[in-house]
Image (spheres, rainbow, N blue to C red):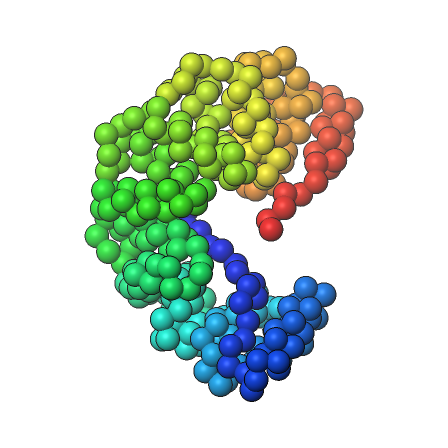
Length: 312
C-alpha cells in the first residue's frame, strides 16, 4: 500500500547571512567539517547564529538537527518552530517537513488539513530550492490516496505519483505500480504495474521488491517465474520486509519454486515474527510440532547471521 515518505537533507546548504565572503566560506567549511566529523553540537552553534539572523536555509537545517537529535536533544517542538520560520520564507524543503510533522502529530497537534496545505505549498515551490520536490509530490499523493486532509481521489493520487515517479522517486513509483495493479484512478494494467514496481525495486525499495516478487509468482503482467519471485522476495526480506520474509518461509516450507527446507522456512518465519507478523507467528507454532530441537537451533543460528537492514 502507498506509504508516507521523507528525505533527510542534512546540511546540504548552510549559511548565507554572514559578515563577509571570507567569513562566510570559512564558517561553511567549519560547519560541514564539524557535521561530517560527528561534532553535531558545533554544527548546531554555527547554524543557530545564521538562523537567528533569519537565514532561511539555516533555519531549515536547524530544524533537521532538532528533529533527529543531532547536537541537541531531540525536540519535535523546536524542529516544528524552525521549520515554520523557514517555511514562512518559502523554503520548499521546510514546507514539506512541516507538512510531515502535522501529518504525524510530532511537535504539534496532528492536523491532516494543515499537512495537506503545506505539502501543496511545497510542490508549488518547484525549482526554487535546489531540492527533490518529488518527495512532496509523493506525500501529496498519499493524502489523496487515503483521503486525509482532502477528499479521497485516486485520479489525483495517480497524477501526484506520476509527477514524483518521473523524477525517479522510488516510493511514488511503487505506489503508482499499486494503482495500475488494482485499477485505482487509472485502468487496470499489470504490465504498467510491473514497469513501475521494477523501477522502484531496482532502487532497493523493499515494498516494491516484494510487490515485484508477487507479480512474478502469480504471473500478473509477466510470465510466471518462480526463480525471479524467489530472488525479489529474498532482496526484500534481507531489507527487513516482514511480508517477504513470510513468503520465503512459505516457499521453503511447501517447496514451491524451491527445494523444501523446513530449517530455512523456520528461519524466515522467525525473522518475520520478530516484526509481529501474525501469519509467521502461526506458522512457527505449526512447524514446532514437526521439526527437531536441533533444526530449530540451526534456524535461529541462520537468522542471527543475517545483519540488520540499513535504514540510511
